[in-house]
Length: 116
Length: 115
Image (tube, rainbow over all chains, first blue to last red):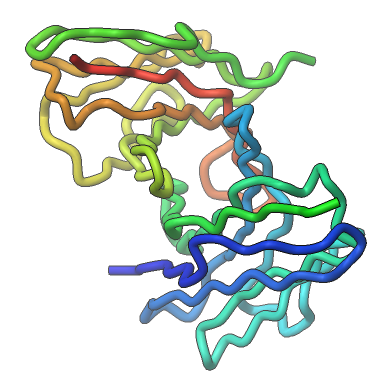
């Protein structure tokens, strides 16, 4: 069975600085997808960025980028120029490529606070 | 366009009761998934429905059931509520089942408290 682990329950960053959130996963599959979701206090889960396992190039979305290390089964999220609105719970998630149910497997989450 | 909507927003029940949670997907989306998020944890997959058929089921007891209607809205039913069922229940919709490009869009959730 696949598992996702986020070892940092809480992280803090100064506004305008850069922060990296860690995520590791365990799978025997070769093809899969990885995601970072943001959940602010409003509870609405929002997709931040996604990565296809067969792509070597790391995904980037504006201030958000990932460091995908397939061999190490690591998938970290870097937030550059942090803003107050980035404060939220961040979840790393895994989905099998052949999973017909579309099931997402989430980590435990990392709560990010941004200091002005 | 409206996003995924869920009702009710909050719900308080007592042990042993039954509860029905409702979800309306984004217009045009045919797939609905349900997740349970216990406080302080990541969401856990409960069910996925596509074209009104169950296509995936997580490790939840038979007290949990769901269905999808012809308009693609969905209901999650939980019988014989336990204290441990207290959680945020999230619904997510997507266009179709298998395509990579089909992002799952989440609703705001229903907060269920079992006393």
